[in-house]
Length: 462
Ligand code: SF4
Figure (tube, rainbow, N blue to C red):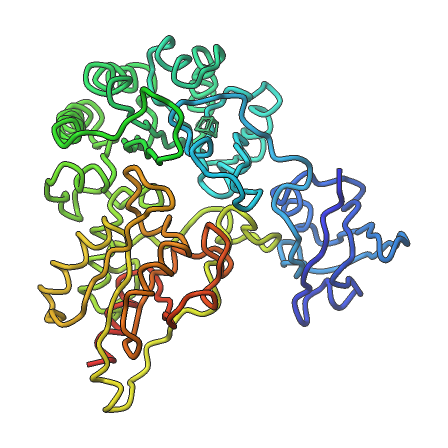
């Protein structure tokens, strides 16, 4: 396996004091070879850490003495040092099969690795999970994990995953729950496959077999124009409504049986169905915010608070999880930093205050933003939905806006205005299809996706 590399050493850290350099490759720690940043972190917590590193082809030993639990001060090149475990499924609805050719290589990685589930909240189907994995998860308390359920009927699940192991791999979910591991679930709903009666059966199966699941998110499939699956199609409005109704019905049943709602429909469903979003306090703390459940309500709350309160004071979940405390590795390739060019709201000169502002976003973002801006006195701010011709189909989320679509949209716009873009469109400063901000025909300002950043910027511009 390639050795993980030190990409940065924190100033005045124990690692710097004892002479670890950026560029060093990490061979072992206290005689053990860490397989990922989770094991790295556990080994780095010791008070004496004997590092075996390779520098310019030469092996060196560095012994770091520090307080137990004190960070070593290293940033490592990747989170998984051996190989990311890829999935052996071939789901009809898989978005990776719907990507056009020629995008960044890591976008085509079909990971199904419980470590990435723990680290980043990626969903795993457990079809490649083993007894050894279970032991490790339990020993190291890798909790919470995120599991794709899709259907509790074994035949439907194996057909959806196109993998016969899909019929039996939820037994691992039972094992995880039996051992006290917290698990969140997800059902990607494909109309005509696992909606309607099948979805009712799945939620009955959750209540019957997996009642310890903390939450289950119900999300619609995405269909791009590159899909080759004839049976995969977007939901109709009626189907979206029925799905939301099913979720509400089961929230009541779960509430009566377990005292909590458990299941939520993603925001996209409410937009598709033309139904109002649930009130913020109905989300029980937004546990599946990262999966698009309650994001709109969080955004609205933060926007309304105008950034004058702390995020968690308005119910927006601060990003928790492993990377809240790990020092080891950036979320390279999975949750990469958006960009370093996020606009900081500053009060502009009087002349700059007359400059028209346009917010560029996807179709869904536009549907949410327009009424919100109007309600708060920002009627003059324009919202411009960027049609997603690159992916086509029913893709309307801001996170999948491509550089090509944005360039086409901006080419029709007059210069001299301020154009704002949510940071979710970028990963490490690049759009999903490769271009960067510098490749656009007009200058755009990148704004943090929390509502507070946008509100501050708009207020400063008035
Ligand atoms: S499990 Fe996920 S990555 Fe694998 S084929 Fe299905 S949708 Fe794609």
